[in-house]
Image (cartoon, rainbow, N blue to C red; front, side, top):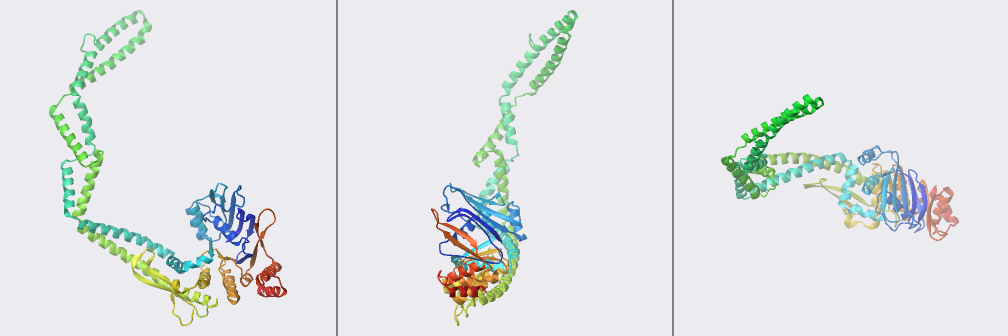
Length: 550
């Protein structure tokens, strides 16, 4: 539940902190005092879009903090899914700086605005007068009924199979489309595949041929270079090995005369060994390097063939040509086995539809069962609100087509008058009737603990007298199951609350400021007396206020 709200530099609020209690809380105050501003600030802290004109002082940042007491372990996975610590005391903080940039935090961890809004929507349901129009929305009606029927797990199973069903259906449609295509396309694919198969493509061969051709095309020059190298090493008058032998003899004689040159002689001997190895390798290379005209021509023809195929099929390299060939094989095989593939896909689709139908049946039965009890409960509540002959009915119509949430069409039917059959809510309910109906629906589902905190923003507008007293009684009853905060102008509603908050304006200083305080019993008597007598505190109004509070 909402424990505390701190607001700084927001609209008419300079600085404000207020603590809320469990049960039924009511907020009153004169028009324009800032009641809706308070809700706007709370919505801002829960991820609503920031109005950049809300800064009380344009040179300071706005900060709104909402502290919640979280006792519902079902919320823990939602926090963990967003890498947030689940704490029993959690703080949602939103900031807006003078440059109109907004930041959001949950327990001091920066979060995306969408994350804050997603989690916040599970903590607080803020309902204004205009939200009653949601009752006429088909998606809202279905979502509401599923919440009452506790269909979350069943619906998840259905939607998983629904996704699988659609995949199989698209697969079957693709196969049938392929089967109906002109066989000329398959003949063309076969022609392309035969051409590539005939070429007997082997992975990596294009690069190998390219490298071999490069060597063969330069064989004569390579041969000449090797002959020259061998001549320099051993086959010429001034060959390196001959000169090394002469150098070795000289150093051998020198060592006898100058002993400290022994190391130089050893180094030269080592060089002689290495040079002899080099000469041997060069001689072998010269012998192995042969110029084969037939082999060159054969490799050149193969290289030209592969190059033409790559150009013809518009691929950038040889690997892509191999991939193209393999893809053509799959397509040709698929086409040749199309009847078998269609039969298999049809079987898979029938099996999926059977499972889908089973899930849809469970959904339908649970919705019908919930609709009966829910219709009776809402009807009983709405009849207390000056509509003694009202009838409310949730109609669950099974359709032949599968949708993302089952095969059911949900309709809310209503009649406010005796002897008039129920009809679609969108056609027969007035604005005032929608508000009372929404209150009855919210009251009916409050026992399901669907959300910890419910806020009504003047949902009781347009009613008075006995109906207002009934609304207050219903709200008090709702406060037993959840935290209910209601903004109201009706003394009959305000008197039913366990906790009464008063919002007022302070016009002292250079500009108007909004404040809020909790009213004690005597202050509540005075405030309710004002509400009863248009701000005139008469003895009669005070006595009436005391009676209401009792």
